[in-house]
Amino acid sequence: MTSKFDRAQFLRAAGAVTVLAATGQTMAAEAYQSSWPEATLKQLRHPSLKDRVVLITGGSRGFGWFIAEELLKGGAKVALTARGEDALKAVARDIEARYGKGRCVTVAGDVSRQPDCARMVDATLQGFGRIDVLINNAGRSPQDFRSGGVGNGMMVPFYETPDDALNTIIDTNLKGVWYMSKAAAPHMVKQKFGKILSVSTSAGNMIRAGNPIYGPAKAALEAMTRVWAQELKGSGIDANIILPGGASDTSFIRQEVAPGAVGERSKDGRLLPGDVIVPPAVWLCTDATNGVTGVRAVGRNWDRTAATAEEAFQKCLDPHIDVPQIM
Image (cartoon, rainbow, N blue to C red; front, side, top):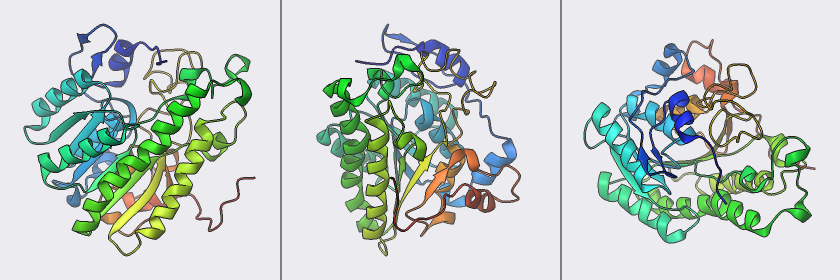
């Protein structure tokens, strides 16, 4: 089962570039419209982003696309993956037109399939010769299976939730991160440098009734990342968690949960802006955060009034708890 949303409406409102998969129609590229002040974005453009190679899963729209846009503006090179090959081709054409040749590699594939993950990493290495940052952004929404929403109409208890929801969400949102990170990490170890960032969810969402798979899968992801941070200590590789800090205005949140034009739903406060995750994600790709590992950075807490990006970043870090307590 797949999410049914108005992709054209999303493109018009959020500025993403993709293809209407359902109809085969190609959308023209549109400029990315950030919700962040230009002063904030300028702070993110650290010199170390020049030619930094960043592989982003789920990179043709939503969080992945917004992060890629700001990385490109900072001088980075991006490898973008998604399940839709046509969408990726449209994104690649747009990037070449606006940023020049040699800045983007695209690879169609499904992170829930281990061979696809290995192929994504290989294509990045073939295109750019190295991989500096992996951003595990690809994910499946529980709302695709009428689970994880808000209100009685979306509150399906675990014992009535179909097993294909369990398999699809775990395979993509947890095992997909494992497969991608396992494929990329050996190359990072060899070059003695690398960063692994994985997109998570709010802590309350992990234990919310009616969200029996997505939330626990993200809890497992965060525990797994903390383990990796310890295992990679001293190797030059950092492993961290990034999250928006609440439901964000991308197509991931379906109309049944928050009706209205995607890209417009944050204006009345119902949802966070779709690019709320961008500042901590980009800053964690820079040398300014080398050695920062095992942390949890919340996009909504980025301090817009801070004098520097480093000060703003510190405000968005959750307190570090040595022994997490869920119950």
